[in-house]
Image (cartoon, one colour):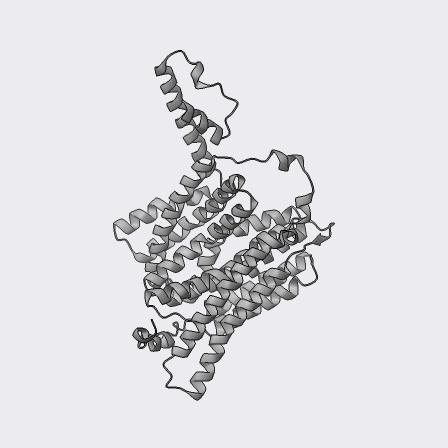
Length: 427
């Protein structure tokens, strides 16, 4: 009976009578079963039916059926891509519920990590299948999408919704500096590769590989230092002005489901995301050939839009409420984590697995990344915002998308092929 009481407390049901007041043990057991079923149905209603993306959930079992019966691979890819969209959004909802119980520090880390779980899982499956080009494209697209599409649409919607208010924000500098450092680590192997190809055309690429791995270690160290700076020593710099304004609605805000329920749902959805991600990675080339769209466009544009669904929705909602500090924290924080944590982590994991992966993403890809970071930095430098800045960032994303849409040149694997020949020597 004690466990049932704890279960009720966990799900916020402390106003119900104690089970010990029932007259018979059979009544107690039936009451416990009824409450467990009722709580399960309530959780299903909040987790599954509590999103406007509910209409996309049928794509998940349809993707499983399509894969089981070995239907056309482009169909498997399309259904898996649709199924990942509501799962990514619900993953963000569940991490917010867990944050109610873990506190702001741990909750912030959980939100940041699980917010990029879709991209990380897709990257790991691409790495396992040795599709380095898909991995690089998807991570690059996630960074650009957060900087231009998510942030741009947030500034646009927030500016239109708050035409008569002055929109201000405080803490964009730390993320901007981190992004610029990551850009330097990305550009260095590219420039080194171009210089090597000009003066030493017969080079096997080992120097680029060593430089990439050393840079990845430095990037991970810089990201850990950033987390310590943000969560420990200078937390006041990352507190928005709205955090200091006491609001009755904020005081009454509690978790919708219990901590253990949220954790179980989180594990279940992560498992489903892993399965669908494997389908996506395994069928992306077939979808590209069947649809007549380049792999680069699918990986850089389509996949990040699906993976960033949660960040996109949350950032726009906060911008509507004139809470730009939170919107910037979502968009820039996610982009920083992908660039400074996920990308170097993939390089290190590939090193451990004996797979040669460098930080050389190509001239066009790195150029688009540099343009996105510089444009975002100039847009946010004055600490204020209006809808015109959102229009510029969003249109810049459209231009980059058009570049990769018309690019039908296959990914250049020559550098990776050269690195394969020396894998035994440097692994």
